[in-house]
Each structure stands twice: as structure tokens, then as C-alpha cells.
Length: 283
Image (tube, rainbow, N blue to C red):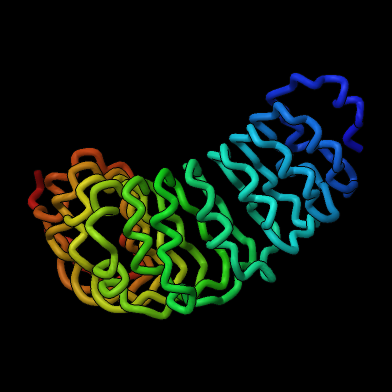
């Protein structure tokens, strides 16, 4: 168990109990009495039971990681807006299938820079069915967003309004949409910030867009989709690109020196399981 003797440390600001085994004991309510906490890491700690609303007393909390405690029960996220200082939030593998207002609640966290909701069983909700308010734009500090392995069927146009977004992970979801339509819907704002884009293991169709619109891209993963057509030479304008994965699609045509000659930082390349031909000079 997590011992209440921690209460004898009222000035505690940093608490990391991650990767211990608390044998499915409940997240203790007294955690909320450690009112000076700024950093709380309980990831992979084999905790269970309901989330304690005492957490909303941690007004100074900047870092919260509950990843990997898949027996923790979260019926709502009403406690989250009470954490105005939160910058890092990781709820990976906690089930949020009943929390239909997760985006609205998260939008109150204006200082949030990292949000991971990987494998949270988020409901298959079209963002267009939400109210007209642009909740994404409220996340004015967000740099990293992970929505991998959920049931989401779309990525909204308004996600492009996050001018600080550098990393977007959206693997293993169910968007049945053309990639060009998805990308072109985003505003120019995110084009000037995005460095890491992972959209693999989805049902994306159609041709590849003009990724030269994202000059800061370092990591691009579009593998395991249903993309077709040629690989545009404009991909060679991504001078900062370090990793490119287009494997397991239906791409065809020829890739030659103009595709790669400017990619001096590229260290990982996977274009396997397509119908591509390669054409290079010996040098």
C-alpha cells in the first residue's frame, strides 16, 4: 500500500512511486492533502479503484502521470479543471469510454504542454458533432498530443489551430478519410510548428499531400494505410526530415534522386511493401 506516513512530509513537491507494485490497492485519498506537490508519478504502479477527487486539491501540480494503471476507474474528469498549473498529463491505458466531454474538460488546461490519452478507449465520436466552440484552440501551450489506439474516426480541422503543436500521434484509430482532405483541412498555424507526425495503422486513403507545407517535419510515419499514387518530389524539400516511413501502402511510380538529394539528415527510411521503383546514379 501507499503509506499515509507520507503526510509527515507536508512540504513534499516531488513524488515518484512509478513501477512499484501496490497489489491493486486503491489510489489513496490522502494524496490530495500533499498540497505542495508539483510532480506526481504513479505510472505502472498496479493501482486500482476510483480516481480520488482529492486530486483537485493539488493546485500546484504541474506533472501527473497515471499511465499503465488500467484497473483505475475514471467515471468523469471533473477534477481536472481544478489543476490550473498542470503541464504534463499522461492517462495512457486508463479507460475513458464513458467520458464524452474529455476534450471540453481538457481545454481548460491552458498551461498543458503534453497530453497522452493512448489506449484510453475514447468513444467513437466525430469531433464535428461537438458544439461549435473550438476547444483545441484553447490548448494554446500544447506541444505533444498522443491519441493512439482509440476509436476515433476523425481528426478535426481545428487541431491545426494549435500553433505550438510539435508532435501529433494518431495511430490505430478508425478515420476513413482521404489523407489530402485531412491535411488540407488544417490551418496554416500548425504547418509552422509540426515536427513529428505519426498516422500509421489507420484507414487513410488517396494520394500523398504536399508535405513541403510542413518545413519543420523531422519524423513522418504514414505506414499501414491505403494510400496510393506516386510519392511527390516535394517530399525532398523537407530538409529537416530524419525518419520517413511509407511502408505497406499502395504507392507506385518511381522514386529518384530529387526525392532524397536534400534529405541530408535522413537516418531511417522504410518504403517496403509498395509498388515503387528506385532510380539512382551510382554516386
